[in-house]
Image (cartoon, rainbow, N blue to C red):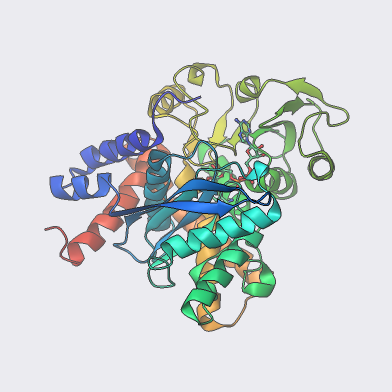
Length: 416
Ligand code: NAD
């Protein structure tokens, strides 16, 4: 799947922005690497009485604009470089939507599908015991990511509070609502992306209403992307894929029915009224919008030339390699970059922290209205830079974010 390492990809993207900005060499070097990195080995007592040891990471890419913020991914292919890349994208994402947080990410190399619920709970608690010193509302605040859930966040919050002997719900976001989670967090990443897609459609002259969408990934992000694209944009979803395979129906697939089918069977495949399609073929379909909502590096130099979508909405992190980015730009296909398109999740995570600090909670309407305002403002600012300089949306987003983070580093006196 990969034609380059995700962290090298993140560094290459920054290098391009640094060159355009004429960024000071020391600032550039500082931002190319995470500020702090932690690793731990977590022994886990399995239900059968044996013990297995898991590798865990936490990376704080930047603390210049506020406490580190970023999800925890449990995945068998997790590496320190994936975590570094994701942590740096969090820095740029928080700056893009102008929230006062830095960038972080964490992970455990494991296959959650092979773990029982009680093993998952002990692993979640073990992770917090390993990193309890670095987490805290004013230090570093984790959240869910691939294969981690609100329940896992609840166990982690409880472990943190038990260690610290205090109530501290803001230490982690994406919690269940009865434990201080925010209304609207569940679909916030996709909802933010759909608001941005609506604005991008207007700005780039791509009509979305009644038009077609293909989605790769049908987890938290992909599923709500489909449901909200139907509801808010009036789009027709013709193809969806997950790790088990893909499905297609050129007349459209009901997202509600597909969500029910997936809940029942564990996959989108074999959905009634659809034909199978290869995951790789889905990416190359002739559709109005393509939404990668799974993992990084799926649009590469090998398939970019075959992409026929009129617009790409990157809801996954890092789905497009730098070489593919150039090819799509040359073909005139607008790519709405990940750290703008999927910033809705961290925006509502930030709202969750704010509500936890106030100990006063907003209605879902308030959350969604504030999210819409943040996303539209961020899109407008980035589109303006891209339009004026005739550069990719991703580069424009980097320019805005890097300037904000570099300014914070300078004001702190870290760099001159
Ligand atoms: P998830 O675990 O809920 O779902 C992942 C989905 O991707 C599943 O449907 C899985 O089957 C599918 N998938 C995995 N490997 C695949 C493959 N090789 N081909 C096709 N599909 C595959 O994860 P999620 O929370 O929906 O996150 C998806 C992406 O969005 C990730 O890149 C994540 O970093 C990013 N993201 C998530 C959030 C969030 O709030 N959840 C926020 C920002 C960014």
